[in-house]
Image 1 (cartoon, rainbow over the protein chains, first blue to last red):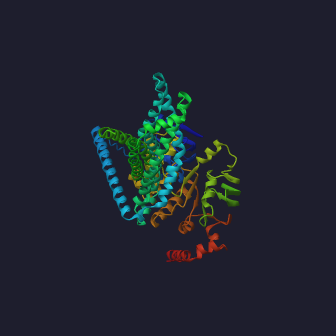
Image 2: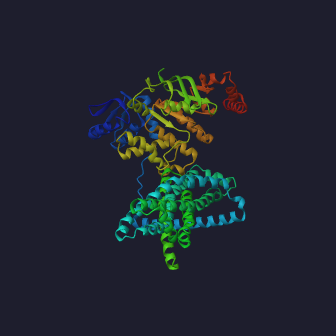
Image 3: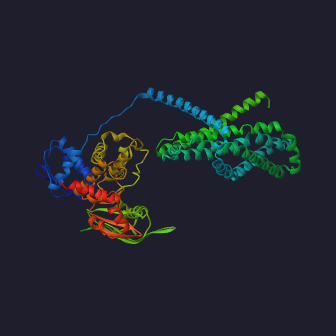
Length: 357
Length: 258
């Protein structure tokens, strides 16, 4: 598409000189740059602005004053000359200490902001209790449906399977000792105290926390949060409180479901591989399960719920106005809320062991 | 005159309604062509069909090539001649303005970095942006600046066909006029064919060479702006002879008369 001829001590270009053919042109010119004193474009059909910029730089750099062009080309070249600006190579590398300091500061600041957020949540909950009109029942119920009821199938299946798997592994060992009936203790204690609440909390941390962050984050990007503020509404009441309330309602209920399904899984496996009849299983269950144990399991769930909903919402509000930031914050919110759930669970275990429960 | 885009009997349907019913328009090379019409008459939809973002029945020829049954290669070849500026500017929010504008060059050529940066800065200056927006992110710009940056991105490979969706909306009058002048200059010097959707009477009269009016699923009129102005249609009458239109024409006459 482009032909470049060397004539005497100059270069004649025919064809079209656009971004497609420019690399060839650059290469050829760099080969001849010491021998040429003029460039002739009169036979060139088309020259795009990118090429003009190169021609401008090249002629300046190599002191080629003779550029032969048609009138049209000359006009365009004038425009290019008028607008051309030199690139500035500013590289700001501030060293390792700067980045360590900056990261540390950002982490501390993030913790500060999160505590600030939690504080604001408590203030708003207190206000809502004084003035119950502020509680948005419709949004709360809607959220319970989306985050609680629609999570039921998943939690049913997963906790059933975990129940089966745990009692299977237990049954192999228990059979050797002839202590078959203790399979009930194994499944019941592990599910009611730990697995039930943890499975539900971790699943909801993945499911709901990410959804909260994405929802609030996009509302922030599209300035919907600002609209809520301008209308004289409190974004906390509209967006955060319903989520926290709905989580605090649904997570304990889902935990009960997970407990039941896990124990059911154990019951079926016990019947199939250890020949324990459901009747025996349930009568043993009455001995094992006591109110202390159930309280120890259930008391954690509202704390998990609060953490999941507040971390999800908080990360949503921390979203900046770009696409990457949404993805980043969704990931962080899931990771952080799962992490927080596990840490809090560990703290509860320590507290219970001190209290001797 | 050569035809840049020829739309013939194009029907576009959405699941629950017909947007266009056998629409035909012709855009000649080096035109500055305006598509006007009420909100919801499918101006954007029609341009999306030309941009191959929207399915349609009928025939659309771009530079003589039929696009309804073209293969991927032909389509890509045509798309490389397009420069598009969407209504919401649609810059990549995770990249700086400079990186946004450089994408088409980096993807399509292997020019040296220094030259690419220079080309990008040149385009920024061409659309009237300060040099220091180069390193800013789109979220740090105002709406008008974002539009200009989007224009710079659309222009970066010197397209032969430039699509603008409401380019001057959201700009202050001075910037809008600069914008119009830039487009006219580009059209004159680079021979770029411009297709724009606009509601701006200023640009409509000042820079457009041809236009069409969409309405009622059809093309109500096609021709020079001055011809369209005198057309017998309620909406057109309201546009040009309604309160805003009259004010505009009066003011414009004052400006031109000494």
